[in-house]
Image (tube, rainbow over all chains, first blue to last red; front, side, top):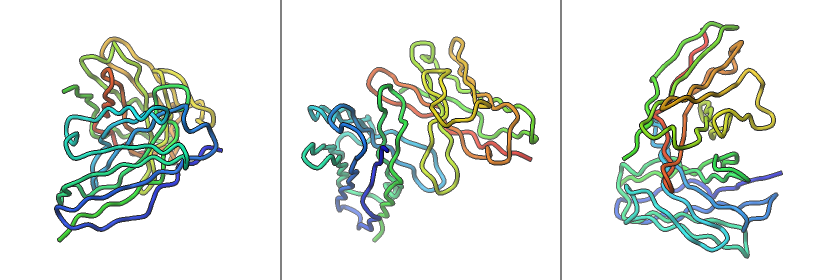
Length: 118
Length: 106
């Protein structure tokens, strides 16, 4: 079955960077893309961007595009999301998600809590 | 930017029908999907392409869309359906989520 396994929780200081991974299994990794979505405590879902696992093409949302980098490694079936120059309001759970065969997100990782605190 | 508007909360009695709306200026140009999120869990897709149910989602969940408004309907609502529901659509290459609707079953 399809699984997206994310890396563990992180605690970072303001100004630092964080890199979250999402390892996929149960399907052909390169055939689909990944989106990253974050959820601040008690808040709604915010889409951050998308990467094609096939060719690495990306599209980032406007809000974080200057601090965000998404990559995909087909040798390990792993997608990565790096957020730089962290601020306290970046504290959130970060999810990876993919849609197999349509544009909705039908598989999600369990989420990675990133806490930004001095 | 493109906004999707949902009511913050909806209440329903067990066994009754719950309807959650999602409105947006460009909704007529895009498929809408719906996610259910329970506390401490990842979102779960319950409706995609306006009306389709993924395998494993109960038949009591249905979706519709007309003009700039999409609706998630839960027929015969059960206590286990209490959750936050999010609509989502694509604005060309950007995904947009609604603000979420807390469904209370009481």
